[in-house]
Length: 310
Image (cartoon, rainbow, N blue to C red; front, side):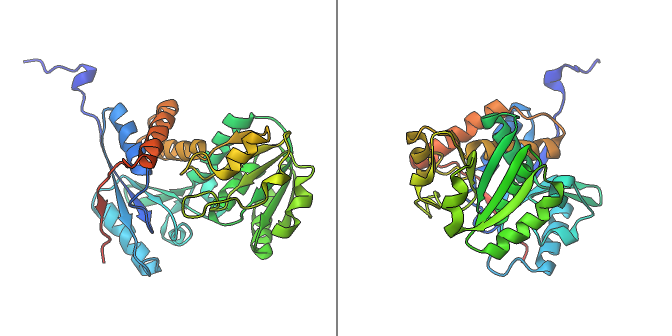
């Protein structure tokens, strides 16, 4: 008897992914991945692994990686507080992770573990989508933490004449500037937050990479009166999608970019790393917009979490 070999009969691969970090259970990344997996007819399962306080020790991180590999995980997404701590346990770093010194995606290949950073590539793709692959003058980045590091790395790789990194901790801004300066196409400067008004006067655009604008941190990182109509304004916050910064920027006639594009692209990049298949980015963005809207309406998506191994 001949066995049917049509596309409908071909068995698709099973994919098991985890997200490790503090407070990750409400994340919208798992449903985004599972919805995209379903479009590829995959048995795609994504689980959150919420860390408790003190679970970021080298021993515990090593145990998590070992357990995930033994349990057959395809890969992991990594978030706060172990984006840096995980590096010493990996066999290889992709250029995106090596440049920024942080990992948010780990893929297992036999006994080898490779770290990537799709925050860098995700912001870069979203930035190009929103503002074009063109030369920019002065771009001011507000926030030099983990998210700011990914944004700075992406901006430094683009045709930006001057990148100015601003943070409440001047030393942190200077450290980030030093790390991205060797790969930058233009000048990289730093400033304290109280110096921001002067730097914004002649800026082409500004990027918010602080928590300001999130539901838990309402408001803006700086005075909206500093914005002018000729600027572009980008925010990496995507919950809510329309932050106070973006609302104020639109009211002043600025071009804007919400955090939805970065969130989608970083998830799509990770999906492609895990599966080797092209993600439908337009569909993933539509999924994310629906997930954010449903959450705001009190109907969040639910993905079952896993417990740590201790």
